[in-house]
Image 1 (tube, rainbow, N blue to C red):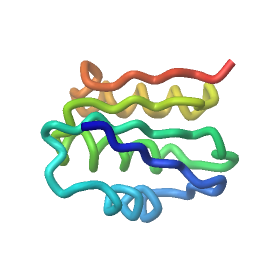
Image 2 (cartoon, rainbow, N blue to C red; image 1 turned 135 degrees about the vertical axis):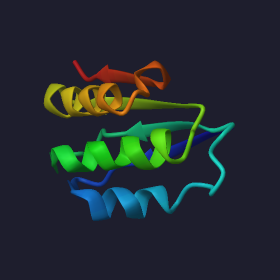
Image 3 (cartoon, rainbow, N blue to C red; image 1 turned 90 degrees about the horizontal axis):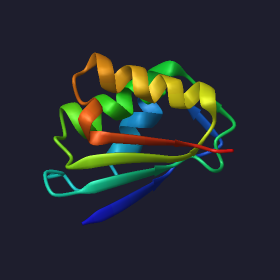
Image 4 (cartoon, helix red, strand yellow; image 1 turned 60 degrees about the horizontal axis):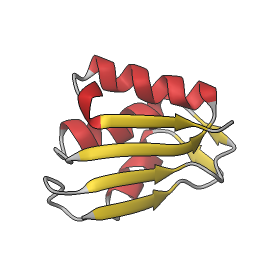
Length: 96
């Protein structure tokens, strides 16, 4: 199953990431989550970290793809996934 999260323009930090996670099914074990950052204008490193924690580490999602993301935010997603040991389940596609 694939579920897509649209990131708002002002993503903020951990609380916003937690709210976005709340829109997904409770059980993510067979879910591929697509995080679409096409509208994202302002974010924080903690936002990316919290999404990685809530979706991949704690949620045990099958995978997470981050699409349409700028290079700064992409770096935050990659670093968080590496820190939490879930880098094998994330794909980050930087926008060109």
